[in-house]
Length: 213
Image 1 (cartoon, helix red, strand yellow):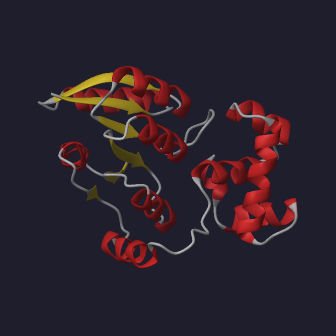
Image 2 (spheres, rainbow, N blue to C red):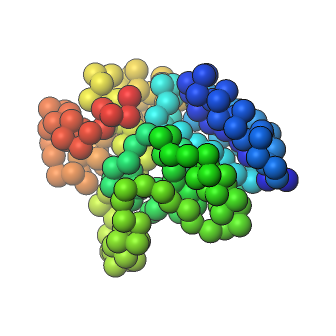
């Protein structure tokens, strides 16, 4: 049996996905979570084979940050992203993090089943409009070069800044210190070569960070 943990913040959607998973032979749901922080804690406790992860969650860390933390804690866990986001940036981020599966919520049940079984076997299963092979070639070509893109945590800071949160509010929401928030902002501005909060918000809007809210 493949042990699957389901992470989705919308209750009705989560119930529907769970019902579908329960109908698939060879899959057993070992846990359900509605936010990224709890998902990481429960993953460590339950040790699932595959985590089925939404990207956009209302509370705390985003899906990408939860994936990053889960993979640190459980290097052998397989990840399948189930999301509405079909943009190149999202797919590229997933591929760069070694995510095994990426499927869309408007897909079919076969995609869900195939993604979980392929991921469990250590294979890659992406069903999006984006050319995965092109992205993988790009990642291979850039391997070894300095990384200028933002980490999942830095992306969160950008998103929360664009939403109008101050350093203290971000620190409380992300369970980190105000000093850590400030350090993240310093690193972000250095990477993006910008110098003001106004420029950071403009960057967030241009690159659709608000779509993750």
